[in-house]
Image 1: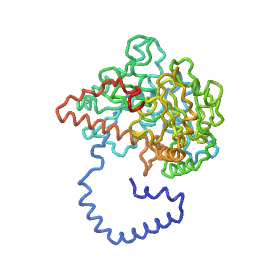
Image 2: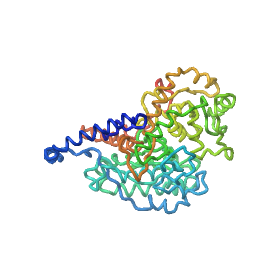
Image 3: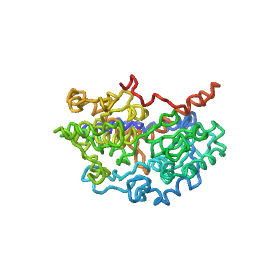
Length: 474
């Protein structure tokens, strides 16, 4: 990290202090300039001693276009399975989507986009092409990135009864990858890919048309690879990374300014819930949460039922979240929701009801100590659940609320994806942490191989307790 990053935040709150630092820096630079020849000679002797990319090199497979670019060029075919009449506009700006110009002063400096979560694989790919430790020599690579747009591809076939069609692209991709010389190095265990869909969409366990998804992740070659997805399954080779929000800064000052804004934001509501009821889902807590919110004078409910309110408008959603102290995050159609990260972006403390919504998911991006940044109200049995959410939240001391909000604001860089066309100097964003986590995971497998252990043991096993109410999440 650049040393200037350490003092940059203060420049927005204390101009005199900033000028003092700047003067000191310039004075020291002037003194050092007199010794530049000696410093250059020292650098020339040591610059080849270490390589900052050792252990971090990534090689990108150049896939046939049918597995990625073709999907973007034929974006009309991707609309089915989404709530959008046309997915093509979301391909703009390297996958960030259309630039939002009506942000009403909420965001500044062209940082806000109408980003669709399914485009995460495109955003990630574009970021990876700018990664600082890319290599064209796969023998140097610690990891192999496979830029298959798995989520976009499978979205065309999820509703088909023909299972062969559902699974065909994934099978073809794996056959192509397994024939490459890079595969034999670790038999695929150093390979990874990204999906903007939940990992469950690729884990159909039975060849029955009534079962959801493709079986991509159960094909043997795929079982040797790792997948990063917005929601992980219960298998060990699936990892969760944040949903993309609408905030994509292109420089550090954008992050600092936004953090300062939400830190001083007035929050008239104690808590809020943005979503729709799920009466068709047995065990859903949403109905009770909505009833409590509607009955409270300190809760804001945004009804996302079809045609009621514009919940797909990021400006509308963020304005609600930044007016609330707490944001309720019950599971929806799956364990996780994009709303988790929209609320963190707005400085709103998330309230979780199930461990699978965040705690057992985003381990590379969120603190291990859940009490630092969130509230947990477990719902083991909806029928017997009679907790008054308002009373629980009112019972949290003001000092603890302040500390949690500060932690949420500090977390913000961890859960955003910077603009792929630029680079942040002072922060590691969601992409950086995901790549770091993946490299660490692969290195552990490599260590097992060096020690003579079977690297397949535990690599792709199912963790039956991952999303249960264990003692850690009781």
